[in-house]
Image (tube, rainbow, N blue to C red; front, side, top):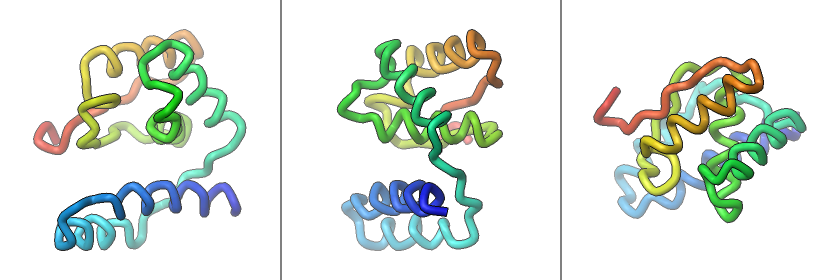
Length: 115
């Protein structure tokens, strides 16, 4: 249960950084009723693997954790505005390369306009 709260807390903290108050409220409202995926040892280890491969800087480990939680939680698509670390070709390819080498499913990382 504690890891579940951490997962939701991580998402809420990121959404609270949205500068536009009206957009921030809309995004936070979207989280009502979300299924909260756990952040456990397996998720943290996969996130560290993504960082090790250089697709996400260690400084932004939270981004790697988001992807790892999604992959291990059976999510098909991660939607993000984070063009710096997540929604870029190299990251999309490397995430799925690492996933394939570990016998995990591939995941789509998309920007909202792609959905």
